Length: 389
Image 1 (spheres, rainbow, N blue to C red):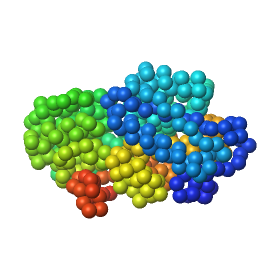
Image 2: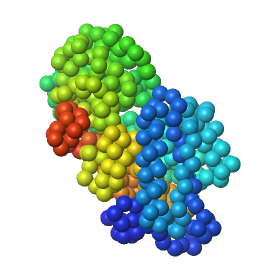
Image 3: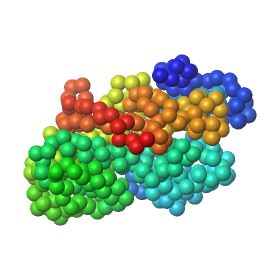
């Protein structure tokens, strides 16, 4: 338990305290540069990211800020493009003298920004990105992650499939871009020795409009179970086009099903087994989850807002723990620390990634208590066993 943090934060966030190690003039705002992909393939989710980050800033400032400094968010559009994202991050660091960065929907942007913050400026960067290469380099790196990496996500999916050895033929369908390659490759590696045959991966065109040929290709393999890593808008397209083709009746289907993605589906795939890495407010019974509810049902359960909220909280809690706003001290203070998130109290692992749980369950339709598609029953899979520390 983080006694000092819990006392200082109260119910919803950081509180003020005095410190001679602040590194900022007394009363000066602490600026956080936030990269939001407001243009590009995840623009809708990016708006929710910004709402979650701004909510965290408001909550923390309402409780006195951090070490006597109010937080100030500087939002920049990275356009989901690595070159643009790095340019925006460099402007924040060089022109605005920002020492803390967060955000982006894109692992490609995150990788480029992570290389930028490795320079002697020692800028601490917190991101919800799945590419495990971002977090390589051990405790010296200045990058922290708030969601499971592709490797951890795939290991958990493999554990689910291996628990059902009767599924001898396992199909895989994924997005045709870096995330899809990474998760499907790691899944295949984690399935080795299971005695189950993992069929060739079927890739759908990222951002495409017609997945019918890909679905038919998958069905032609006659899998007894299917693992789908297709995400966001592509997941909605897959479901809409897969339903009339009998995709979810032909085999046992296990897929990424974020609450925000399901909300965009006119006909969610009821009965399908799904999981989400993202902190939807409806899943967790924590003070931070209740704070997210103030954003409204759709945004609070999108997952993006909760992840951004966690990013800002991780920075604030690290500063509070370090008793300093200097990134190097904050990095060291966060190493191995326990921190409060929307998902509850979790630990920062050796690669600087939070060991947040993965929520899993059967997709159910709206109910009196949860008027939206959700998991019922729902279980939380611990991820700490998947870290190689």
